[in-house]
Length: 306
Image 1 (cartoon, rainbow, N blue to C red):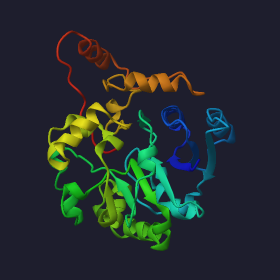
Image 2: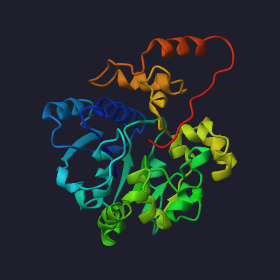
Image 3: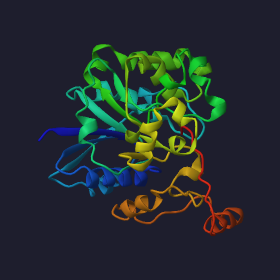
Image 4: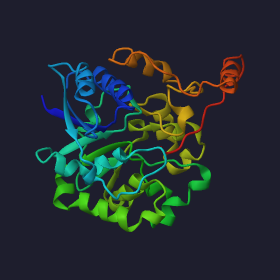
């Protein structure tokens, strides 16, 4: 049985969501040996890593922790509330010298179907395999402003099948750091923009079911950027659900109306962090929640890259 290598990055705040994602990964990918590489800041207490490891099954799932020193990502541009851990993924080729490929997952994902077919995908000469990002309408020109051919060539970095062997050979980690430092003034979503600038020409397009973003579900123009039939297949039969976008798109936010919200809580209850502190509890949001539960059509929250 071959080993599926998975990487994720989390600090103490996001560790419960990471545990939920990993529980779904283990539950939905049977008959597989999975080795998870947890990238975390050195300030994360060992006790928290130990709690995360308690979800591991000795026969199928193991968790290897990698503490990333601040110097490894120093000087790289930040973005709002997102900490520097967003840059950890660019270090994976050198962090895992004996691993040929790795599946990188953001912590705000839920695995709902087995991942064997994704893992065994032939990457050929591609650096990464990823799903095209679907931005808000007014951001459709962002890819061209970066110098890419168009929005259909810009990928979302929340789910990445990474060809580590090829990336090591071509020194992609160094290229990504240099790109971020040289272009910091024009990077809107710093890590994702840099990944696209360096890797987009060698990106293998993934079917959107491998990264079903809120934007794919909610934005009608997703059918223009992606094959319309593929979008329908992804919406009705996703393999990885990505709760990307503003805070109200996260299952732990009181305004979230995602169809997989309850599945998130079901997996969360099986982790060492079963209790959830709901975000966004205000009088106005409580009223909005009551209204959304009233009979009649429901309006979904739109999403964008987070």
